[in-house]
Each structure stands twice: as C-alpha cells, then as structure tokens.
Image (cartoon, rainbow, N blue to C red; front, side, top):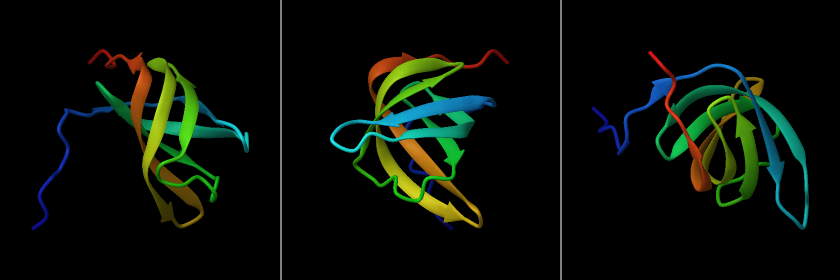
Length: 95
C-alpha cells in the first residue's frame, strides 16, 4: 500500500493548458488540464523533453503564472506532468 503524499486537496479539472518553457530554450506546449490544487496542477501533453526542475509560464481556465515541473511520466502516447506554482495562482473549480 502506498501512502498519498499530497499535502493539498485536488479537484478534477478539464480544459486546455498553455505552457511556455523559460529561456534559454523557449518552447510552447499545449496540453489538457486534469486536476488542480491550491498551489499546483497536473496536465497531459506530448512534449517528451519537459523535465523535473524546468520552469514554465502557464495559463489555463483556473489561473496563470509561473510553475516548476515536479515530475513527468510517460503514459503510452502522451506525457503527464505535475506542476508547483511559484508565481501566480490557481483557483479551485466550483463543484
């Protein structure tokens, strides 16, 4: 049995997310939002180069700002990444 290490409640979320990696190598990445929390979010995308520790600008229906990639996993033909917001904010979806 694995313990859930999440410190904040997560809320299911849908919609587009735009990510832009910061210099020196700027890339624009489009993805799908899967959930949000008070200080982070998770998204599916196709960029295999996005790695933990990389900083991005983000924008989605629940917030915008800058975030750090905490983890990235390969899920068949797409990638899933978790992000920690370091500048800006994320509001919770209404239930």
